Length: 502
Image (cartoon, rainbow, N blue to C red; front, side, top):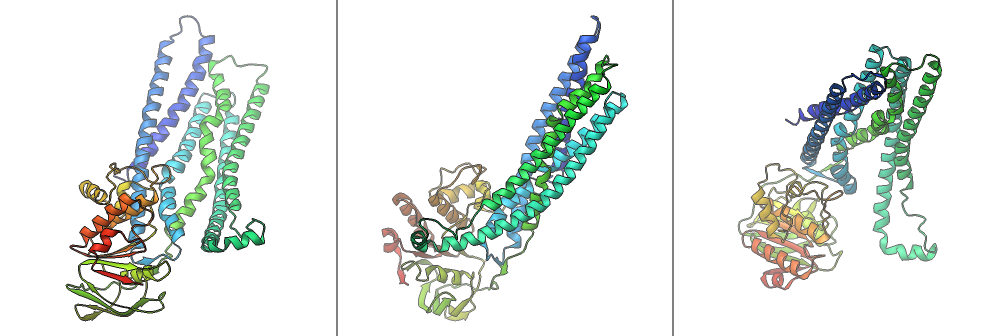
């Protein structure tokens, strides 16, 4: 069904714009006819035709909007699912850029049909329709309409080429800005030194002005092209009046061409101002299809039934290994100040980074690596610009509504009852605590045998800390829950049989 929707939507868009142009042409004739025709002229029939065209335009417009919105959501879902599948076994070294691909570029690419193809296809049909009607009636200004059609084609081709070049440059500058921003923000603890040295200025701070200038150039190019087309239409209209000043316009149909020229920005304006945006769609396509992820350590099999033993176990970021015996089920706390290696140990256990040392399941040494039912919940979870349901299960389109609501209720998010609610830009923005609990609900739906949770209580108020703590304690009765935290709720401290000081 998804494959047919854009073509049906495109057809409705063409019908919508064509009906509008026919209303303009027919109304122009009708206005002149009312002034020139005798008293017995049948006014009813033209009025009925105009009303029918108006109803057709309204119906096709609403149909196009509904189908285009449905197609946009469906394509965004499909693209993100494909991207998730492709990056499933990959590590993303430039996480900010990959989140940009997932959140923004997929949406940009999905809107190609409704945001560009529909406008340009409608413009082509409108030009052919207007030139065809004017030529078939042999009206004054037929050549002028032909010149305007050719001018629109030249301007559109120029805008597409210009948009491709500018969008490519903009992407390069955005990438450089993102890279500089990450390094600049990582040095935030040293900003006070820069302030003193440079009197409150940051000469090394990343500058977004060049990116915005390119963005503005694309918008301005469309406006300049529109003004150029409008200027040509005015020149063509004046020329038409000059050439026909002696014989005049005594035929009602002669008013059609002047009305088309006067309103040319109305029926060709939107296609012209969006023509340069094709470059963005092209860059989004290249971005979504990039494969920058690095392979993760190989997935390994094997599960512990009684206990897990770590001997000198560490990741590349730890200065010394950890020696500890963990239960196969229960609650384990990794406690310690920031920077002591809690997150690195969780990443090594999750198989997200290469691990060193030995790992034993029930006394048998096993290989460290990724395991299907071990879920890592990161400290700073991302919220996709998508529906709540897609955020809960980005790669599971068959998630049952009851399961989704149960997951939300488990972590105090029952107030988010609308699964189709859009999150992020243009929709509801979650607080930091809500985003953290959403990531826990997402992990709950995966039904993990081992939870590896990084700072789940950070940024939560007292009530939500207690709620999350209670849920994790409940999960620890049937699974192994390892929590890295510097905030230790009383309930967790009392229920945890093992607290590892890092």
